[in-house]
Image 1: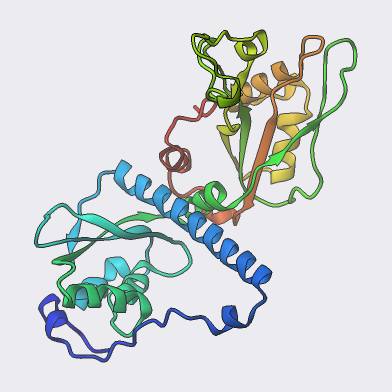
Image 2: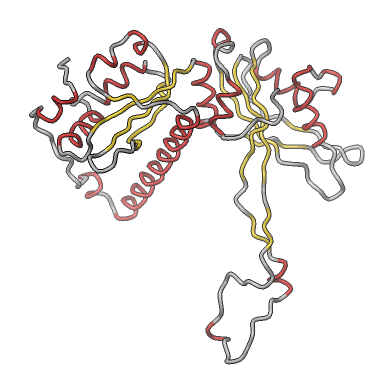
Length: 330
């Protein structure tokens, strides 16, 4: 592979193929299908941006220093060759020295050294973009930063960013005011990581003196003052519900299925010391007042080989990713 220094990039002559805006497939599609395809691509792009923003927040939370890219040998060093990591690519300009993110990624399948070389190789799509911007003086310098992670930490981040929450159903109240959790099928009989969360639905009452619908021009008469109706006063604005992580479990000695069974369906006498908090919360949630539903509880899980589960700082890894402490992890 040819090697280029930072200085060589500006002088490196290479034919760059410009991206052609027209997509032949889209041109031949019926209008309805074309619209759906564009909307799907737009949704996927928004999702990618959300994931990248989350990764950037993780990198920023651990306060890593940017390293200036100087030569290909940066990524051939032994300490980068076989490591998994979260990494970011940054740049500054001649006009603004502050370094901004161009890209961020969790390199959980490909070693960091190999992945970074792709971003600084002009023969690769990723590297071609970067080289072109340096050549055209859009950018002054290019930087990178990385945080080494273990396989289990990579899987923990995958659990957070790629695995969907599964709602836990519950029975009708029995014995007066007690409900029981109904675990879903398909929980693996294998080691891994799992998370437990609950739905946080915040209610914000509207001010009785403010009608967000605005005045009705058809009913507006001079000298009239808007008087809030009882219905307007009682309207409640429901924010979109979000699920709060409250516990991260490591199914190392037991399987995922066994651990979740012991959390949701075991007798209180079977609590282990580290499970007192989360199991107490789940048990208390089963006791409901008449006409009141228990909190909505959710789980998610990912299989991980047992040998990898003891490596890394998994709770701290997840807390950095979500931005708040896990309530029931010691």
